[in-house]
Image (cartoon, rainbow over all chains, first blue to last red; front, side, top):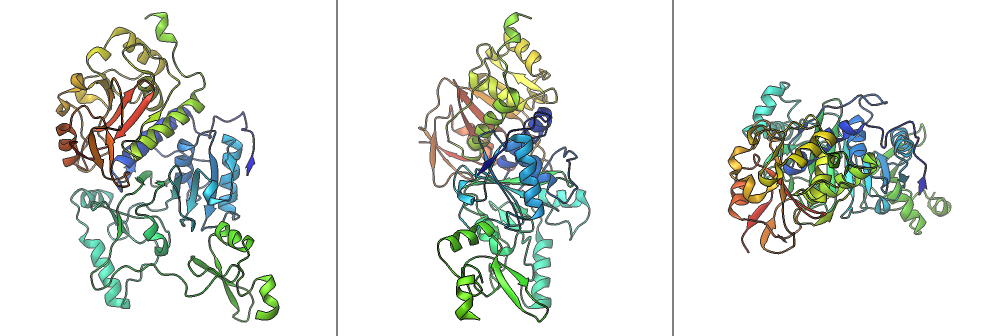
Length: 296
Length: 189
């Protein structure tokens, strides 16, 4: 864990107190109505839209000086987006940072849920590009708002049905729509559908922030979350049918990496903390240095 | 305005409000959980938790209704100086604060609109004490079942029946808080 002292030029966690109160009120209403998208007055942040401005504002409103922050981008702690957001909060809030999922109290994530199960007391903050699950089916906000009001979600089932008619299966593999507590259909952000089963019954608080679209929504702990499906085409959480080539895990979500120009490729855990933890514990995969001698 | 109105605010607003909000967030996300918030020293009859919750959540953009004995000059002065919130009738309030008996009838408060259920009032209820006993709570945020000493049962059942519309409650006693969002289902002991 590394801690920095807060840059005194900034208010704690960058945002002014008035803005934080506004965001905090929106978060509480989002918790009270799980899955409903609460409008909020999103601020311009010192990073472009699409780089997690919604998630950053939610994290800023939730952070306390005692928090331990973890930031991941597609499961990785060491990619540009994760590194810059982590440094942003180390500088403006002086909070401790960690890469270990179990040690973190606030985790900001782009498009993954960590492999290690979350526990009570943790908050998982999602960066969301398009919060409205019906937006690509109905571009008018006034119409989608009415559809949520009337619980009119037939269009979403038509979309999933057309997937089956065209491809023989539901081809949606990320941002797979879910129904929350039997009421609101919600976009879980572009997480792979492999992560969908972890949304429901989660002991941690999950908060979704969309900066450009100015929406916050949330799942309290132990909320019932069901991925939409049909009786004869049940939802399945899919992943690449391989083991991790570095740690050998067969239960984690994998990234495919091209390793040469002859079609060679490897599969590695997208969750870098999970993979590194397994390697430290002695697990080896097909392309691990120690296994390389006999394996290749 | 008396000198008392000028004191009793946060000494370090960014840090104190962040700790208070996290406790309030946890209490809303896990109904029935009793948590501690502190930092404010408001005039009676407001408790430490009531004042801290107001400082954390209310400001000049959130109309506040003072109910019953909470509607006294020291409280009005304290809120005006520290928060700047407009003090309004129940029908216009985003936040209301008072004892359970004086908040009734609840139908005066906004329960949100069908297309904007978030536009509902939050009621801060002044209690003598809070404990994990009495009413049974189930719903989002609760793994199986939990208990909370609610002042009444029927009003909260009616409120939950209106979901996704409805009021959200924050119970405060001393420096303790417990949240009860509209999503929680309440049953008698």
